[in-house]
Image (spheres, rainbow, N blue to C red):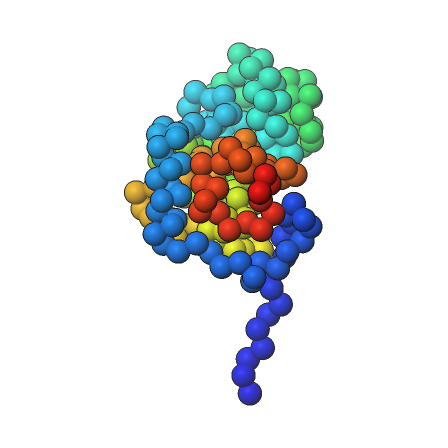
Amino acid sequence: MADRKPPPTTTSGRSGPRRLGLVQPVDDGTLVEIMRRFQEREPDPRGELDHTDPYTLLVAVVLSAQATDRGVNLATAGLYRAASTPAAMVALGEERVAEHIRTIGLFRTKARNVVALSQRLLAEQGGVVPPDRAYLESLPGVGPKTASVVLNVAFGVPTIAVDTHVFRVSNRVPIVIAGTPDEMQAGLERRIPPQFLVHAHHWLILHGRYTCKARVPDCPGCSIRDLCRFPGKTGV
């Protein structure tokens, strides 16, 4: 008896949920062209969280959960003037950290995590953020996405952090079709050619944030419109 295929995953598009199995991922040649166009448009992409070193990046990414980059940058401007190292953050203390970041969501939990991870870094790493995924993910408030951002941005590790923008863009184009961020990350890291992998994380985020937006994607202004297979394209 033949194995039954699992039901196709769904994702939301402009016309509501669609069956991902009805659209096949782009082929390898098309994927290379997509990455080439992203590279041409943004040769040296940068993240939008303000930071000066791996530690301040780590803190900013921890604070960015359920918050906008702009909101985090407004909060960390004052926080980093008061404390920009693990030792200074521990000395500042949870209550004062919370005062600096009270404008962002879950600020009390995030303040507790920032102080706790700073204590860990001091006690176990001499205050230095290591390029070690397993260690990073063991820190309070740090999950796979946060670890991937820090590894990629601070250390140039060719990894992809899957946020809501990356997840949406990859499923829409589609580059990789997946139902969870972990599946998406593994798929993207397998598919994207090595020469593009370091910057692919930023290209996909920027494309999702400013062009391939959730509600009304700007398909007329899209640099890969002719290569994208998303059935909910606008302006057609």
